[in-house]
Image (cartoon, rainbow, N blue to C red; front, side, top):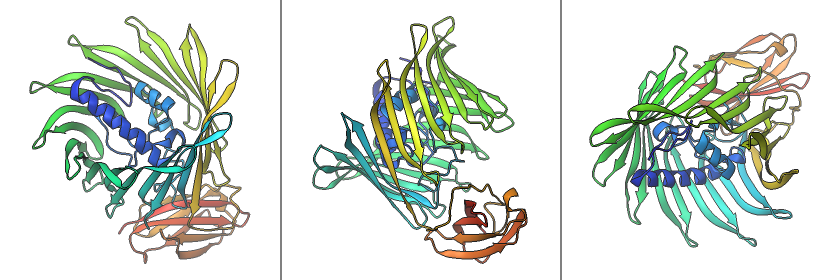
Length: 476
């Protein structure tokens, strides 16, 4: 049986492999719960890496909200989720070295907001999440549910993730994932081990090959207790700009690789505007689904339209309409379904931010045919480990180069021209390592070569109250 599921999915069903996918999606849903990037991201896989055949194993910045899981299965691109964009430095997990996501609380609407779930994160001195614990509310008390325990290498790459479940008395191991990397910090091997009550045993793993830093081949293997057996592989092609243009998935059948599915990509001005998948049937490629994306002048996705192939033409399926605030953060989007030749509202998602541009609340509304009604929300709580009383009402756009550097770099911003400012550098424990006055030049040299290798936080405050924070990597 061939299941069409678009980017980021392309998987085949049936037998043990179908179980593996269902089992893995369950963990995606739980892990999405642990990471919490947005309330859509109420359940998150922690390390934006590994993929199952054609990204069926999501690149760990992926939502688990039931509505979004449905869209992911149908092709919703995880990078559309707010805060997953690298330029949106908002939430935990090294995306923001100043404001760390300490906890979240999720609630359902039942003639009032009622507690549903919560997550609490613990960090190491480098800003990595080392433990995330989730709890469920039974109407009277909060009960422990699941937790993640993570370890990292000296490059802050995730090397081990253990899932545990609370049995009412103690934490019980569920599964364990290990990660290996090459000298360029590219993920080369991801292995999932299952727990039999006493020891870990082989489950499934993914091996990755690269051309430079571009992944060109991913192979999925299943453990039979003694050996690893290849079951599928996905090859990726790129254009001269390093953008993926084609991903082809094959399955092992009787010792021979056979085509299963593929996704093709098209771009306009650097933005992916069209991608579509096809399945392999009767020795030919057959259209499945396609996604058309539109952007604004800031390269924010404003429209994401899905269509299905009915055998002769493309038929509308669903539509996502995105809106952004003045800081290019996603403020809302509406999901439409194609019903009886019309776009019909299905749900609405709203995002609220504080003065530091951290996501503070996510709201999901359902459409009852007349108006939007409350359905679900997540509230986010942050810790600021570098305290400052300076106003952040005015954002300052700064550039630092090179970054990473050996410790000597330049800070530049048009707003600095003829305006005095103060420059601060903090380590990951929040200790001030450098303070420097900027006399008012558009470019300011900074010498931090005496500091050891590591990740630092650069803070700039201008005389008129503009404020900026930048993460700096020193590597000698």
